[in-house]
Amino acid sequence: MVTNDAKMQALSLGDQGEEAVADWYRRAGYRVLDRNWRCFEGELDIVARKGRTTVVCEVKTRRSDSFIDTALAISPAKQARVRTAAFRWLEENRSTGRVRFDVALVVAGRVQMIEAAF
Image 1 (tube, rainbow, N blue to C red):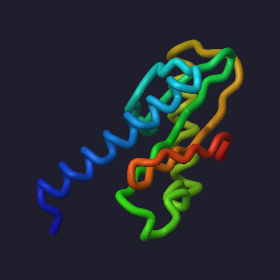
Image 2: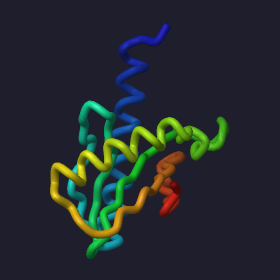
Image 3: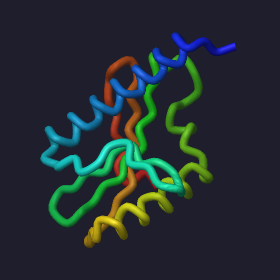
């Protein structure tokens, strides 16, 4: 059984990972437009923009790398949900230009970015 404390620790860890990734994008010259954006189709962890490129980033955070490869957590079904939600976000925000889908792996506090992951 998962306790509320365990849920809070996991949420806190996820929030910390997303903050680290948002900072990574800012340092790389991107403007973070949205975080944890939700719609019927799903949720987008981070939406950022640099020039004419809008980046949708799925963030996966782990305490250690002793488990399965974090990148494997982004299944084809999850990728499809992220794409669908992204196109909803793009439509609602009247965003034009190029779209890229990144995956950020945050393991033990270190950010590893996989640009154009899917």
